[in-house]
Amino acid sequence: MASSLSETITTDDASSENNNVTITGKIYTRLRLATKSDLSHIYQLFYQIHAYHNNTHLYKATESSLANLLFKENPLPLFYGPSVLLLEVSPTPFNEPKNTTDEGFKPVLTTFDLKFPVVEGQVEEFRSKYDDKSDVYIAGYAFFYANYSCFYDEPGFYFESLYFRESYRKLGMGSLLFGTVASIAANNGFVSVEGIVAVWNKKSYDFYINMGVEIFDEFRYGKLHGENLQKYADNKDKNDGGN
Image (cartoon, rainbow, N blue to C red; front, side, top):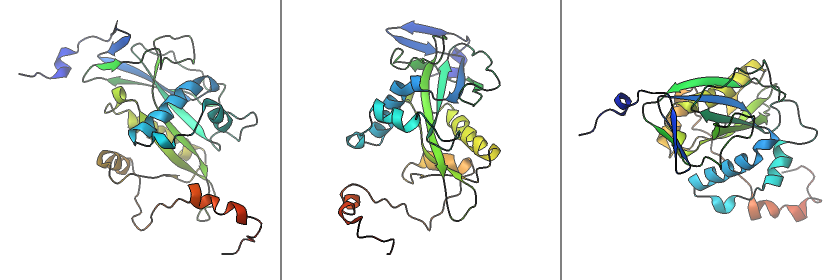
């Protein structure tokens, strides 16, 4: 009764209906460093990953607080402070970027062959504001920053999160995002890329294993936060660095 979707996709185009854009055949991507003009999209994407994990009650960020976190007037050197890579998609090809952008990172252009149509259902909400190309939509992000350890004499990356909006999952784009972060680390003197891997999410777990991530079962993730952290606020003058 059902036929292979790939057999029905014969053109490289996009159609628009009811504020939706359907992309078939090929999808063109641009991976670039986020700018301040992306704040509203970053805010929405961070909210969505909280929703994915059923943790929206923990989402305290505002666009203003994210601006202060990500786009300080006197930022740290490139990739040492909080950094966001945004993955943009389009039904039409991107122009080749300059060697580097004003942000100091050359955007990565890639093309994916689609096995099934992709529907962009939030055209206006996630239309990119980066340049004058109007058929570009924000699909996902990677969030990372430099971290330090007494085990190494150089910094590494803490890979905080990777997220795709639902329409753009299962297309192979995760390897592009994570692989680019790993490439940035390897080419700029960072010694590792580390982060939390959810053991309950087998697909995510297997993805990171396949990307070369080593899992250390002897360690558990610990976090001091909320009321337990605030207990120490009144004792800060009493603590002298001892145990």
